[in-house]
Image (tube, rainbow, N blue to C red; front, side):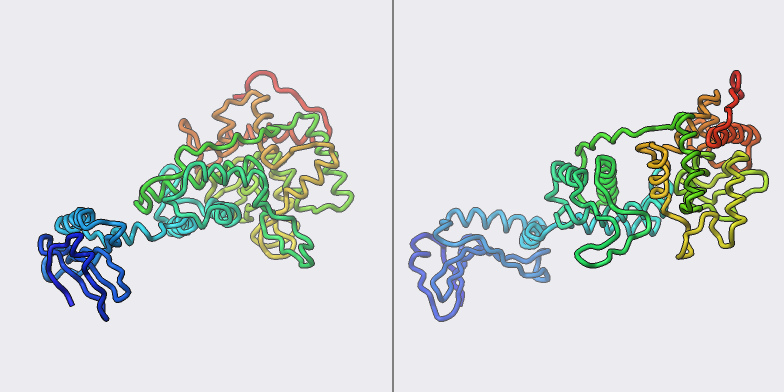
Length: 433
């Protein structure tokens, strides 16, 4: 049953409940009405067709209950709803969207990984994001980001929330225990080590989240980047190089470790990284087919793109000795699963403990190589070429072995090799380049 009368307070008060629901439509404002329930509840409503005309979808908006709203106040609200509908909007659907929880952090992260793996998101210098970078991003997302803020809607997230996530990571809230017995069960150790906390991991996770949100904002998946303005923790200071005296201690510890049966592949990698300046991942993933007879490694891809990296004779000798040990694709193979070796950090930790050295990482070994090159007087441009850095003044995508770089690599490796073997280190007068 429906009636058409002017909705006044007297009329609304006089409306009696019936066995069935009925509506009294206001005769002065089309679409504005009062719904009366069998229970006696009275509610103001507004009805319109979304899209206009008789072909539009019929919508009914609940304005509010009588007693909370007066007829005059309800009429004002009804005019706003009906006016919006007349302008082509759909107030009912808009309200539904407002009530729906927005896209979550986990959903945005999943979208990023899917799009990046498909090559639809570009990283630095307009290149597709590397598989190794995505693997690290996925690890941080699953280990740190999703457990801490994954369920939150991006639209409700603030810079403070992102900074709190960073603080929790730094404090070790998402760190995982080492492999072993956990509550009576053996925990499987994943390749690549365990998840830890600390300022460095936390700051990099915050930076990754900010970048992911920025990609999503540019693709119009989200309206704003909630991590914009979030402040990163200062990275923890680490030892950036070993002195030649410390290199001698490292060499003595390596020799002792060989004699005592420590992992020979891990020991060879340590020696190779400090003699070559290679990044840890570059060294671990060298394949036999990439070795050049002229003295270098032909990488199909690195952090700076495809390049040929020069090597000194001392570093080449390590690779040749490894190649002679067995077969397979990898120069530094894993002990069991057919992949490449991954446990260099553990082996380095044991060696450095034996040598009495602290805070030494594969990155410190790489910086030691660069620092020795600087001590010998080589220019920053030459050192950048030795390390495979991309630079605004030179390209890292070498297509052949540059003779000057090979000479420099050989000289730096010779000085470090002498220190490792505790032999006199010959000083080079002047600048060699």
